[in-house]
Image (cartoon, rainbow, N blue to C red; front, side, top):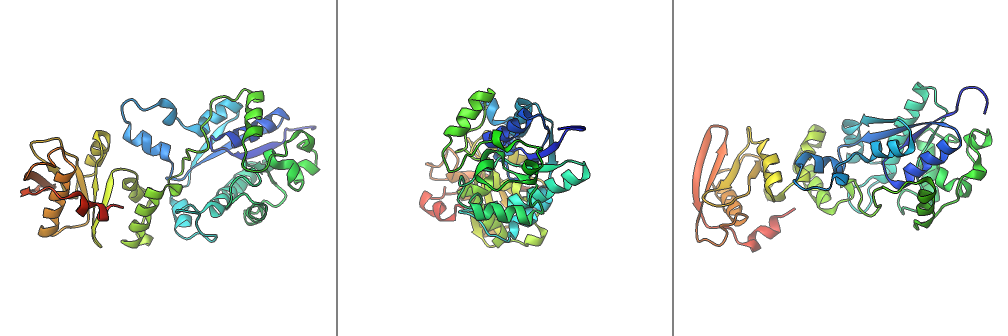
Length: 347
């Protein structure tokens, strides 16, 4: 290639596939820039938020930045949480098994990548997608639809599956040597592992773990409940923070409680007590229970009973529980709730 280098813009999640896609293009002498989109639904962000003692540092690192370092390319992290949430609430192509709008997600991110490409004078966009790897968003028809609806027809290269997909403009114009790209397809990972060994990429997250809360069954139930019991037009990314921690129990259409499961979760919930009712059992080791909504007297007694149930005084006949909201405080003497009465309330 003569003159200025060809520049490719890639979606770099930090997973093995996108890392390898970038390495394949760097190997061919292209200038590669990675984009990593912050959606507000990443599990790693939640781990950092709680900062549990003894947490494996690998589970706290930013995988996109790590992947960029491994590939020797710059990574730009872009916050799209507010716009992304609007898409998640109303995906054109629907959800997967939980609340994961995988096709709309790809289209959304690739439109942003196309915008970045045009604004920065780059030549094309690439991803780590593999034909047939994911049933919802990586079958042939879905890949074609994503390319079309993102406005990247002919300019979206999937390097790992290049030779089992139609040739793109970068290949036709000789910007990329198609013959040096793989023909990976299906759900197996052997070819990717072999490529990783060739490139010396040894430290990467396993695909089975998943980083997106939208594929998590527990988070999905809580998210659906949040939508069902509120005004979704007023929903903001920060409203979803609580969905990532604690036990959630729906007591009524207007009242929900979040019970911390360990000290880091209780400490985190404690930062948000201002303006909210919160409960703790006294004279024992107790979780913090944070209340969403405005409970009446009867409901506050129920909250106290549930808090006692999750304290280490659950086997006592009665437990004293303190409830506070700003300057208001009351201490209730309650019978700990039975496990059978709490289970139906859990989200």
